[in-house]
Length: 373
Image (cartoon, rainbow, N blue to C red; front, side, top):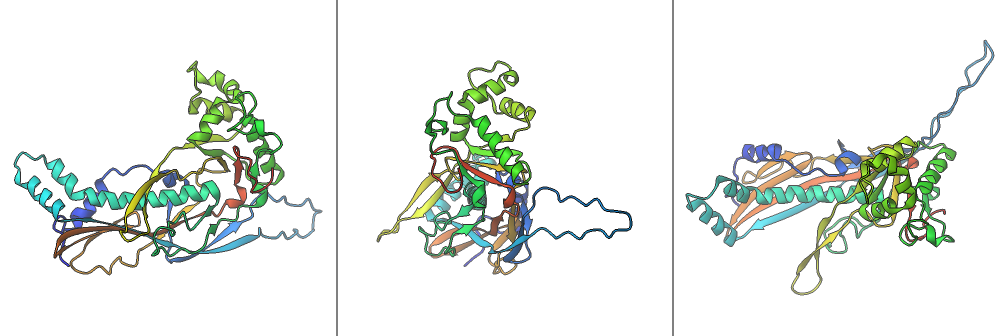
């Protein structure tokens, strides 16, 4: 093992991580990063609902003692997220060719040097994004979501269940197929009524009122086309026919005290390991937010993306150039036989949802019942 052929100064690598403009991820708002001093974490899922009232008493009477909210204590191991990329001899030759040409723009050289750094950093961020959106869309993270079916080195063996109450898992009535967003006509589906039903359910359960309804673009198009939505948003749309804008719809929803819509539009590529003697890999584009579901939440901050230091931090051999940013450790080193340049990104991270008691999931399309109607 040798020092990196491209970046052998940690300060240079750190400067790139600090100065590069990284893409905005949904999880940055929905699950902000929160440091955990331990890999095994304990968090409380509190049963928070409507405010408990004090008692009206006589003068001289003792104040009645009230109980604390019950809390379900959860334990979870934060999972390593790792990715590695290698430049082979052909790539090194291409790099030398770039350096040998006086007319090569400096930007092209810098892009080549830091391409793998960007790749591994973004790959870790993409997995955090996938986990956060999957958790909030289905309230479970399966072993398939963690790619254990494609990589036997993945450690997760069981499904993570965030314990959304059965009463908070809703479907549109199976007896009224025309009401489902995916099958009913624009005059039959009633998304505004569905929003009001969730608001009423939250009030009856003593929960925090939902402030946001999160959906993907498929459900947004169905929602947006409904006559109920068009009629509601017309005064706020400023004649921007034929489609209502998200801003116009949200202005209308806000005026009626209904949750604002957040449209999740993101795709992530997953590289899967195929079985067989050749050990080939294929890339599949996936949508982290599942079709059919709308999730209602009381706050834009839905949980925390807990993270802690990777075990490798501070234990790197002398030949490794490494830097750290937002809980992501990026390392570079090389080999000489054959000449290869490695870049690795790793983090120890996982999303948690302490406020799950005030969230609601609605299947608006298929009518498959995983809760109440």
